[in-house]
Amino acid sequence: MYQEKFMKMAIDEARKGIRRRHGGPFGAVIVKNGKVVAVGHNRVLKNNDSTCHGEIDAIRKAERRLRTYDLSGCQIYTTGEPCAMCLAAILWANIDKVYYGCSLADNEEIGFRDDKIDKLLDRDDKLYGSLLEQKEREECLKLFKEYKKSERVIY
Image (cartoon, rainbow, N blue to C red; front, side, top):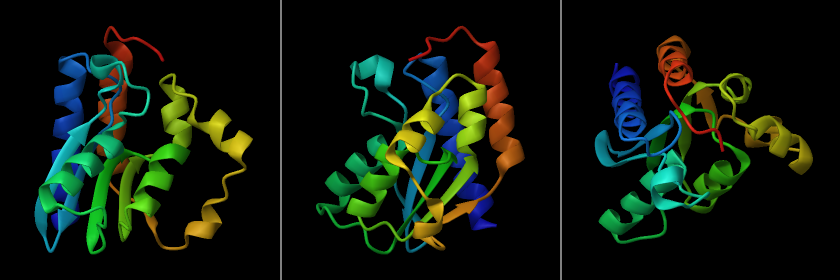
């Protein structure tokens, strides 16, 4: 139940970013002890910052709010499977669990190149064990379809 609630918040945050033309359909929510610590969305276009993905935005906010670089005990809910950069940031921040909606292949379907970068970096998800868990894919796919139909900048 909580997982659905937090994923819905991530979807809503992504929609907010899309409407404002901040970037792609990527929203994230960081939770600790059942409480929302931070929400973020993709701000690549808004900030002219190729690193400001939804997960990175949420991590930055959570660390400021909690006044720590260590997010142990936190979970992140994100509309898309984290790219290599975001996954590395999640690991550096010590986030315990990642719940994601759409897969890297789904990201590619709407114009993002995560898969190419992952192949270049030889990413092997088996190394992450139970860190990653897909949830609410169908709801996130609806979001991705909305994004694909919108006027968007592919970057």
